Image (cartoon, rainbow, N blue to C red; front, side, top):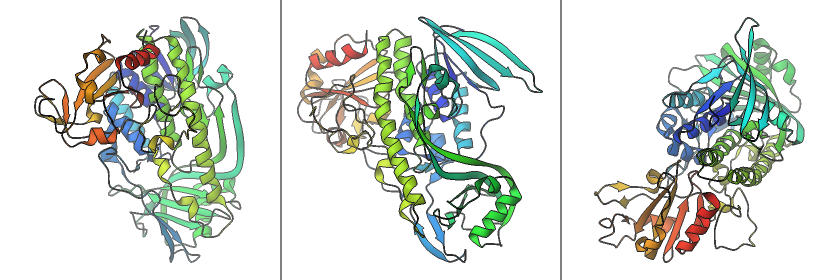
Length: 535
């Protein structure tokens, strides 16, 4: 294979998002998965707003929104299994804003999620290769030699060796890539355990718009959540609790049904086929770094934790999006290889904060108090708008260098600093009279420089940067009459100047991953930023 090719081991959402991002950048990749069949079942169904924004940039969002639904309220039952004790809005929908058009979490089964990503990847000419496993690799200064095994069925395996430029392990908690790199995976194994799976219910008497819970995690708890697809009789189920015999409950369809009846007290639910059921032991661990040389890890290969809070899949996709543009720039010889060091530097603090968040939710869920509701409520920060890279070596900002940065919250504190998520701003009038928005302008293959105020007409900002990776656009205030004629855009509704908290002449540089790379007042600041990024 060509030495600009990226080999991706693992075809879950992390690996697929990475493959799509690389394809957008024109980077050849090969994506393999040792599984013989694609994922089945719902697990990993919560897609947070920050991930929806990534899918918008990648062109996948319309399909995701069409196939997903809002988070269902959770109904908790009394001991009789029928009377309602409480109803909890786990992640309640709120009204979108100009700066946050995708403000609510969406639910989509992981099987469907991956199917849509694979379909989008196929449009780029790439396909997932099932039954192909990365066995080992050796690194060299200019390439990686990978040894792969193709599982052809009937116990027949075919071994081969290929040369690629780079490897990314998105190969899960038992990552071959992580093990061979020798990365540490420190953390803890929790005593709390779960069983998760999917099962059919015939003529269900349950409300198909809600998530149902019986019992309590301090002893025994079991839940059923409908797929909420018209005519679909499938339900996602989770069972947990300090007194639950998880091995037994997950051993067979009959054992699961017996456990359900004991916990819920319901005998009026007729179960159909068991689709899948597994015993999940909770581990909370993360790597000490996200790669070495030409090999990287992402997603569960880099961090595992409690599923509480719906953060893991989303964090993996965000790993991929952070890495993709940097790797693409380096492969195209637009950026120095040292840029890749920022992948670890930026993601490590975010993942550590995420583990803290999800562990706190896990403890609340399993705390020994009957009728516990707190463990099922989801705070605003889980939508991930506040995830940021303030203080990163490749971010330029004139703000307070002594501030204590919260990697999970500071980016949503209203200050719009370098390292924060770039907000949207609709109502931008172009020279041809059409309206657009910041999100429609941003491009996952290049930096977008937005020139505000006096900077909009300052030719010094328009140095000879490579157009394939830098787009420079002027944004004029809403009371400007000639801005569009000058080739820029008029902020006719004022959202851009408000969302970006602009005061005076300023350039805001948005990276290909939708993060503000810099806020600068003069052309020297622009050159200083790109001096860190481009060769």
